[in-house]
Length: 552
Ligand SMILES: O=C([O-])CC(=O)C(=O)O
Ligand SMILES: [Mg+2]
Image (tube, rainbow, N blue to C red):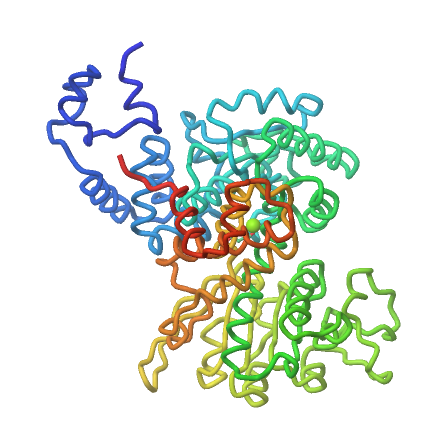
């Protein structure tokens, strides 16, 4: 076999960085242009090429091809230009890439596993085909709820790939030890089923029983083949996301990024916002618009913070929350049969009064904090924002619905109607806002799970955690909040700057490891000894020594 495979294989390819000696020894002399370049020179060329493209989708395609031709170069470029390139390899451009995945698919790529429902009964055999070393972590999706884009079927593969690129860039997981998986259970979206270029199964999704049987088989096969594998569930449709989490979380080392990761990031932003208001936790009143499973999931994570940090009982903590759905304030006596998850926060202290909408509930509750998970674009009207700003010196407003058209308000609207006093984080990425009066530029917080999942996964891998507990997730949230520097705080930020993501992920990993050891779920003896020695600096250097750095 010709040694040309050295430059065809993305794991070994160095292109023009091969020395002339290597070129001669490997019979590659003459196959590469004359100049011998450094990784930095190669990176500069790639950056110029990325920037020369006219659309973000073209940039995405270029970067995917680069990843598939030279891993080191791709990850060096990503790490050195994280803030510029994350919106391309990750949200929002990855969403567009998923929608068009079957059209932009590169037939030479081989960077993940596709496991179809037709493989039911034989999943283990598919896993046995994975040609790379044993993975440390996998991100698994079934493509059923990709971002806010709905059921994309097999086209969802862009998400596990994008999330794992962040694991590698942000947390320093070795790319050779990451495994993107898309489960192809068909799709219920006619546009994909009818698309002549669609590359997945052309059938509708199976019923509940078959779904859970298949998912149990997949999880059993993964943990049987790779006992230390950390499994991240991503972009499963709501009820399945919660259903799988409840069913599988104690049995496997798994977490759901959309439920737990997103919740942890929102809580982290709130912890910093609460600090910024100067109001003690016991005096905060949190009003939620949206009482679906996502709203209740996030509210529960915040409630647990009130219990832990505010020394409250479950009942005391719960009393700081009011949930509004399409019928108004959720109360026990409003006359409709509440779905079970809504009863967790239903109020019983309303003395028979009912509040039919957000505006009247706002007057009744006088919240310090308003959170939207309603998917109703624009419902945080200028009037609502104004009222929050009248009630609070620093109103906390988090419109968390995605994508843009579903966002409860924009950053601009929140700033304009609060005299720029709002403490803001959103689900959608908004541009900065310049106050016309002072020319001061303000930056919105984005409550994206990318701030925590790389650190949670890295911590769980290094601890060899046998499961991922609520407290490990909670710890990641507090750790993220604590990484905010004085300078970032003074600039009005609720989350650290992305250029510090490596350092942030390392700190989160350290706290996750400590919690795993404390709870007895860590299996890595070396890490257990380090935590028991109580030497923070040694733990951090241990983590750093395990991190991947793209160099030749
Ligand atoms: O991927 C993202 O940007 C955040 C996320 O998990 C989702 O929206 O499903
Ligand atoms: Mg997601």
